[in-house]
Length: 131
Image 1 (cartoon, rainbow, N blue to C red):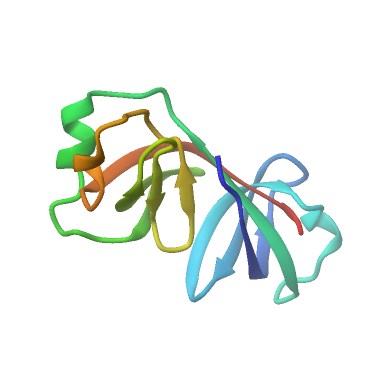
Image 2 (cartoon, rainbow, N blue to C red):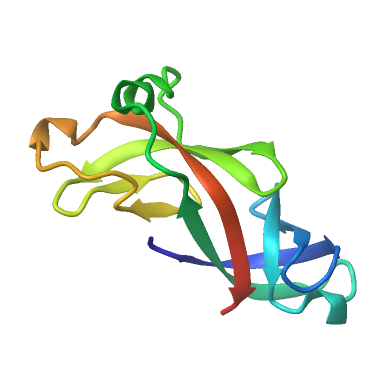
């Protein structure tokens, strides 16, 4: 998976390797705290690396039907799970532009007809660590 380096605002944490809340570009994200949030005061800015972990691949057709609005964003499902909505920008390896994140290899295909297709894949977890 491709990671993204972002400027984040620390909001709160339940502790190391537990759920934390950060804000990136005005969006609140619930992430796994791998950045030591217990040492930060609320409102602290820091450079974070976001690491998406794609869930087990589901139904191929569902991936291509999951984004009828042609969006590029993360939609929180529960906890630190997200639906990553984006567009396929290349194959071999597959790269999807999901706004905050560029997902690499969320699924595998060699079919160039997938480029430009809007998709939705489930992220089992979104991790954040110090950049």
